[in-house]
Image (tube, rainbow, N blue to C red; front, side, top):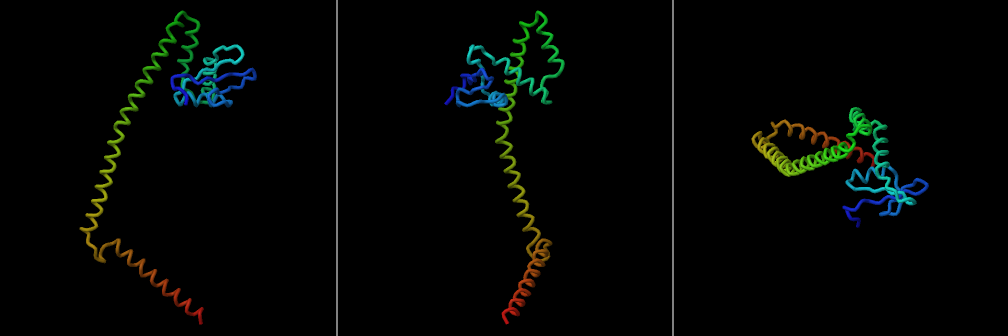
Length: 179
């Protein structure tokens, strides 16, 4: 079992193939994106030089998703990122972005906790509502009476009469065939 705090090590071979050291198989960029979406930290290392390539691959994953129309980053944010590389503000941008995403993750997890805490109440409310509807149906059926004047029962008795006629006709046909 893999340790959750330890990043998943992906090795890049000279052929540019990516190798998952945990499962001993080759992976694609989309597989890596899936690991990250599942909450897994990933580290991509060049096998020969030992260079950490994680940043380049993550940027490539973002670029591929952006080019497919799955835009997450507005143009003004991308422009500001490019601008930050050419100004003296580059030292503040990474900390700002990291803090912003940390706050986003925290608020998202708190929101999920609130939704999950309300979920049992919603289920019990739905169960109560279903019980009330069943009770009302049962009560309205008893109050309406059980005689043949009840509209639903009239249709049922007509259907039953039709079935009886069909059975009688089939019995007559069988009797003729036996002769």
